[in-house]
Picture 1: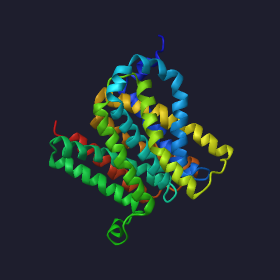
Picture 2: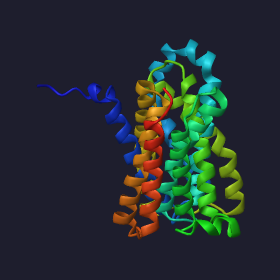
Picture 3: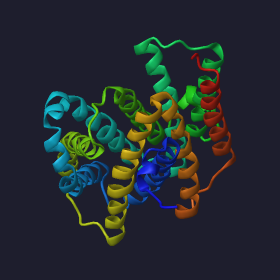
Length: 300
């Protein structure tokens, strides 16, 4: 029996497992990147390199679909600016102040945000059991962000890094919500356009950052981290996730983001030597369990 890679690209479950696997690795890479890169600079350089890498492959498709791109360029630009640039800008910034395990678990708040956006903006009905699941998810994130002491939130608020990461999650949830308006174009053309939006949005942030602290040449480790984030979380994961949303819809695809904290936490422990503590396990169970419960009892 012959093997056809195209079959994998048409399998929603395969592409929606590939995406969170490399995103989990992105939290670890981002933590390593703080040793060599400034957060806004790595974001801008990452998307500029992604554009360069994609150009020879995407150009023929962009020429063929020029009419559609001309009509829908602003949607694609916004998707890249919000979901790619702002999410990554704030995620890399957060890793200067919190752990990769925390960042990985907090990303699982995104499905709850997506469901909330669908309820508020599209008036999708929700059940009481669905609300209970979402509240469990929120509590799980709170446990993680307060190091197992949720009552301190009312006294001290959130750790700076965890608060920044939750803001980043809002932007990616907005990107997932916005994918419903993605035009039907080839995935390479789509990827190049959102890379353009991300690079453009992150450029002024990088210029401001370089005014505060001059650029220093990263070590070999820094360039290897950059190579990883350009190829895998940037290109492979984004294409896989967008394809998954296309195949089964944003609400169902959003549930696979629950795999990010599992992969990310495991990789952070194995690669960075971070400690996985009891409150992390409690937060992970509440977040993933809450979202699965909410989906199980969603109003169809």
